[in-house]
Image 1 (cartoon, rainbow, N blue to C red):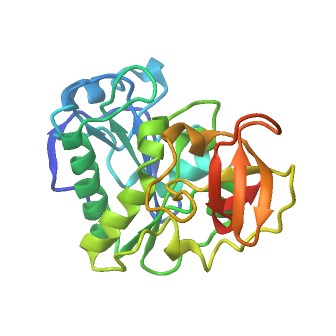
Image 2: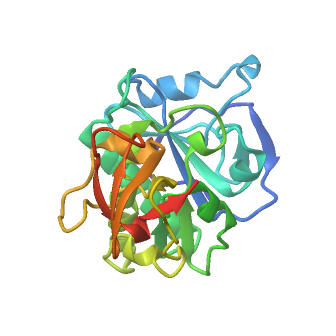
Length: 260
């Protein structure tokens, strides 16, 4: 397991568990909650008392730092199992919701994900948009899977801004790697996520990046992190809402919904 050649600064943290016991097949991007430099991200994790770290940091200018060697398990996602198999990346962001990242940080994240996939023998990055489906999924040869910190702790990380763009991230990385140009959060995952059997009143979650029914536009970012309710069903078209009664949020193809 080598480190990325895109790194421009190294500030190694003592906070890690040594060499991984699982091969790398996940990437977990985080929001660092501040417009920090690459150096400052590393400095956050230099003290042993911090009890936290990450593999890479992306500063506000897009420069990449190495905080924990890629071969080692960082302490980043509040999950021993996830951090054993995931490369963790802290990204400079605004310090308040939705923790927006600037364009240069996002482009650097795309480039770093491509590099991680290439060096680990992967040609496809998947975003399945659902915790249970993702953690149960066994990546096939050549597949890397995106996971998020909010699945393992009571946190909003990586923020609603990046969470809503993870389908786009997976699609762009996969296209650069030479895989399918379709968005893995939707078409690529259809063979993995079975269409659920739903009824009015069911509580559901919406897959990240799923489009509004019959349109090319997507929901507002905050919708993907909400618990939603089924209000109406007509074939594959499902009307969803944040409440059992009251204002309707919108309509979506039911293949993008998971019962909770």
